[in-house]
Amino acid sequence: MLTLAIEIGFALIGLAMALNLWRLVRGPDATDRVLALDTLTINAIALLVLFGIRAASSAYFEAALILAAMGFVGTMALCKYLLRGDLIE
Amino acid sequence: MSIVTEFTVSALILLGAVFALLGSVGLARLPDFFTRLHGPTKATTLGVGAMVLASALYFSATQPGFSLHEITVMVFLFITAPVTAHLLAKAALHRRGAKRREELK
Amino acid sequence: MMRRILPRPALSAAIFLLWAALANAASPGMLLLGALLALALPFVTRPFWPDAPRLARPGTALRLAARVAVDIVVANWAVARRVAGPLARLEPAFVEVPLDLRDPFVATILASIVSLTPGTVSIDVDQERWVLSLHALDAPDPGALIREIKQRYEVPLKEIFAC
Image (cartoon, rainbow over all chains, first blue to last red; front, side, top):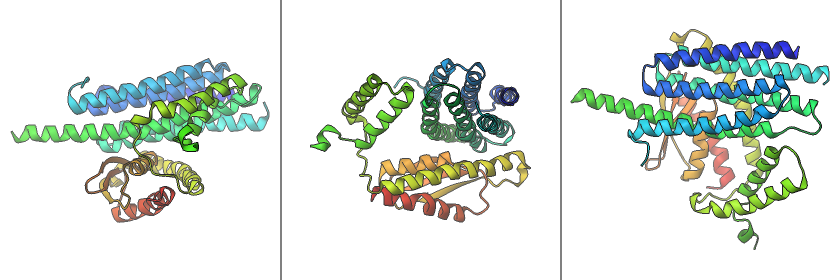
């Protein structure tokens, strides 16, 4: 049962990431793209957690944590850039 | 692992995946930026939350001792999601204003 | 005396619990390291923190946290149905909530709660007029939404921080 649930979970999150990618390519505005990128990171975290359950290894957890931190900082930097047109103040 | 835990873990995985998908469906379908902003707040809160709870439950059941470190991912996302949404909304308003000023020139 | 060692007991407790969860094993060494961090970090980061008001009612705080958790699940379900349903029926709106509280820190907590519960995203807290502006995905009646936010979240927050 668990194996099946994990497989379905992979499929659903893969589909979600494809939709995010579509929004990332389509735009239309830069803020939409940043939002799509942020959502992509969050879905990647979910995917990594799922990989961790399937492999029964907690090594994936560290990758998920780093991705969470990096995704947040990256989104912040992009937002600041959109707000000021300048990254380093 | 008992059948009850296995069932709960499976249900949480499916719940998380469905909500992550619905968040992205919202991101792809909704008509303008501010409505799209609602999609990802959902995907983070319930989608990743349920997924992480499934992982915590699974590792607590299969390995000796409790496994709580997955919760830190959830805590971190719960703190950062409002900040991200807030700054994105500000950036969108800023750009919208800039565009309008450009048109008036 | 207690205040000198622990200037922010809530922050110290949060750091210690987070460290214990992150280490994932309650070995004495890790717990000791966590305790040291919990003692040291509030001092190191003191210049960065705004003056947070005193936590007057921890019990009410716990009840509010539980209520927010339930609201996140319920509101998620409601928004999921709207996202999957026909979009033409949605009535998105910018809403301005006049605030009664006058503390930047508490206003930030309120804005975060509003953002976390799906269906509403806070955009700005105006600290001159004390207005929280937010965007709602589906608000046929903005007045009811304003009343709900004030009733459900602002009143308990004011009580918790006694401001």
